[in-house]
Image (cartoon, rainbow, N blue to C red):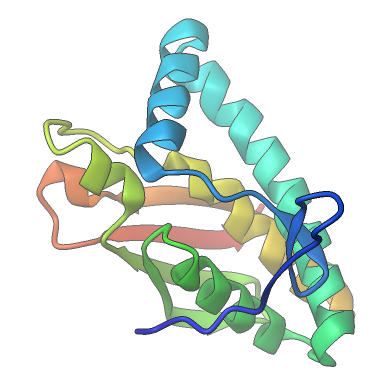
Amino acid sequence: MKPQLPIDVDESTGVWTTDSLPMLYVPRHFFVNNHAAIEAALGRERYAQQLYDAGYKSAYYWCDKEAAMHGLSGIAVYEHYLKRLSQRGWGLFAFESADAATGHARITLHHSTFVLAQPEATDKLCYMFAGWFSGAMDWVAKNTDRSYTTVSRETQCAAEGHAYCVFTVEPK
């Protein structure tokens, strides 16, 4: 995969944008080291909930903006979301299955940035993404006039010795 992301840099402010959304570009070790430090300070359970809520909100917002920018709707927006995440260094995301009518999805993640940056770990590391996937599915629900809301969780992680990570999304 050779991503061809449209990255624009405003010469007067230094702000980077992709698809008109402001972006940050930081080294993986910088992000993961900060992530691990916050987890240690707050505790995994508390930190994971904070990330879930913030990630949900951000994914929902992103889907709304990208749908308008690219003229997409429904599950195509979610597919575009997974593609963009894959192009930004988080790992390679794909639907194993997805059903916009029911709110169910199973998402695989190969080469997770968290697993690659913490090779000594042996437990689930990729929980940060869980809220992203329910936020995106709930956007699809609203966009397709469905009434469900979903929850997502990491059900398998490559750090546990699996070939890849898996997230499940299902109605609450």
